[in-house]
Length: 126
Image 1 (cartoon, rainbow, N blue to C red):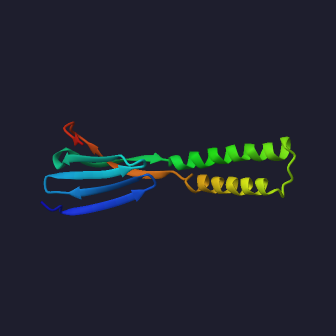
Image 2 (image 1 turned 90 degrees about the vertical axis):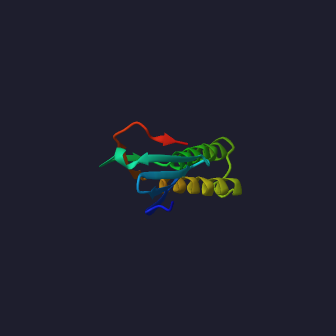
Image 3 (image 1 turned 90 degrees about the horizontal axis):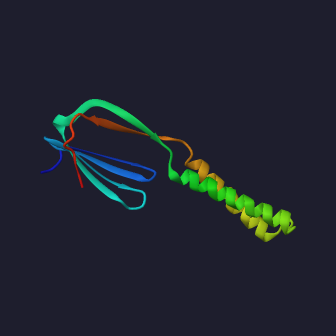
């Protein structure tokens, strides 16, 4: 049976597809890392009220952590080894650190996801 309506959304690390059928809503999705899920919710168990979830992408923390590690290497190159700031190793490390910081800050804002509240407990997930 074909769905009455289909809604697709995509955010960093998450893709979901909501398919509305006369008797149920089917949610299919894929999360960062390749895990897939599928959930069927009977329409009689869905409340018209919804909740929100705010989250920050894990890529933000990875970018900022990478920046901190590269900044430590910069301190080691310049401080302990006495390399000049114009050294190719220092310049490449500084460029990588700037890129990692930009990557981390690009994913810093929180995203909002909306979810419908279940009134029953007979949801089937696969």
